[in-house]
Length: 436
Image 1 (cartoon, one colour):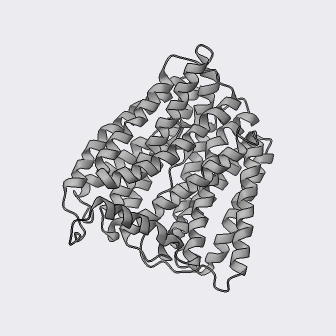
Image 2 (cartoon, helix red, strand yellow; image 1 turned 90 degrees about the vertical axis):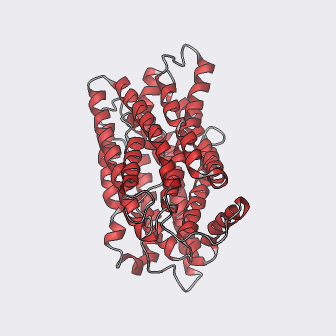
Image 3 (cartoon, helix red, strand yellow; image 1 turned 60 degrees about the horizontal axis):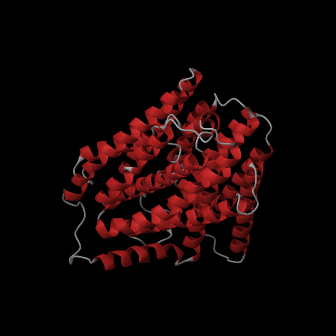
């Protein structure tokens, strides 16, 4: 606890919060709950409900980032985190679409808006910790959050599977609500982080709010100053957009393959356990992978595209589970490596790195919004298999464009990382962030 304000108790706060926001037994069964219990059709869930989260998350991430710089991280996080128990409460209301069609559709879309705000608050929460620690403590903060997230995701998925098998699915949604309340009750403790002495040298002159925003914007621009950093910025944000859409609609794809979803919880638990282990691989092979950075840059999106294409053509639920687990692991491993390479190819301080990652996530969300509009009810109106085929095509086209860019430049994006970075924290994903 030497590098973080407030000592070791704030690591406990980080772990408790990360566990609570990820402990969502209802996550693997949201589609079943909305269709079987609340009366929506799968088409309504896919085209009218889930897209609302994407738009709300994108707007909330930008708004909260600016508000946090202007008014402070702690008050913004406290208010935004309140949206998570509020969203969970809306799913527990004794109403259904068949009873009140227009009213209940509006309430569930409001639920998605609140979940989007909550997802953005999680990103701001983690940014506060990284902005409050010395660079030597990045790995400790990242490992603490990652371990707690893993424990919350895996344990809650298994508990959700048990409750569903015992026909106690409402209890899973109630447990999710209670954990979101616990997460909210933990946020006032962030005042300790704001009031404790900083582990870093203070700025010689107090910065105005305008200068803070200017510094943040300049930090975001740093990712595009060179060809190498731009390649790695795209290698993170484009797969991120496709991945969040894949996680958004994976339950609808599973539902199209099998009427029973009793194994969804187990599949989610195994998926997140394997994905978390895969995210550690770039660290263990940190001396080998940078020497083959160009290969990783090209092969990762192409392989993810192949796996999503296989998912779109899958006819057996067990095979779909296996493909999803492999795809999820590949994404987390490649995303962790892309963050390392992005950090190593930009000349940035820790605060500027936080701005780079936040801007990169926002760009990924912008791409996600465009793709969702194009493949959803606005234009193509694709069903789950068609959606996954479209995501696969986009990833493979992206890999092809990267290959052409590298061929047109004699020097490939290859830089050996020189300092530890927060590379173990995955971006908030729809499967756990929005399934409250």
